[in-house]
Image 1 (cartoon, rainbow, N blue to C red):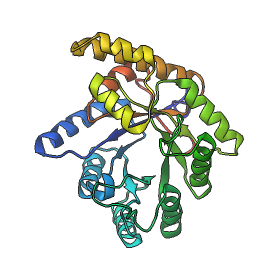
Image 2: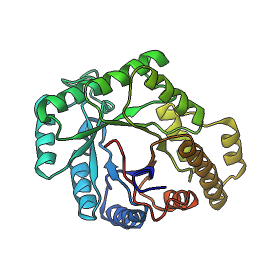
Image 3: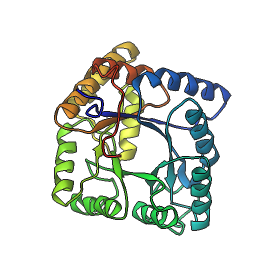
Image 4: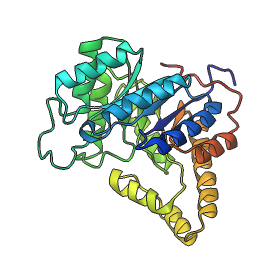
Length: 290
């Protein structure tokens, strides 16, 4: 496999809440540099609740030698807010952003801000910044939980691409057929940008079920039952999780997925174990369509 054919690896982090968490983040990020990530992304809280933390974490990761892509949410923000954020990132040399609608924080009621949808945000970024930013957007192989139906969800995704998105990261999933079906349907509609599968390591049964309930990701019954059977045996859960997610990733790569985007949860152990199992070491990862 040549360097340019190597699947792109990217990683997601979230802003740490205190000094100890910040130190853990830096340690994990340094370990995961061995994976040669094409870029790393940094999440952005509802209504900008972690806005300063996102910018600080982007700087921290950039200083480690990573191309860092801040998540940007339009919900609860004005055009002036977004314009100022984009200008600040541009001034710092940031070249990639993840454009999301975001969720309303509690207490905001129906005030979604001046831009209501991620497609509006993509259009705004292009209008304000031209081609300065590589724009990542979200895709939902198992359908966005608030979409009316799969076709409406695909319409929304295609709208983001048509308005200027360069590539997409999916919500995590454990059924590869859902990913391949979504990609096939998107391509049939004329979508040509890379759609990179989002990968959630399995390290904590309760946490996984909570995340999945919130975002609408399906955890297959056989996985749920196996995880439940381990009880509080954390080592067995982690070992099983690494095996399951490694097999998922191998299936995806073998069948044409352009890369893998790991939701790291600011921990290196599981992503690194999966990456090593995939035998991608020593290959620098490049996103061919960037």
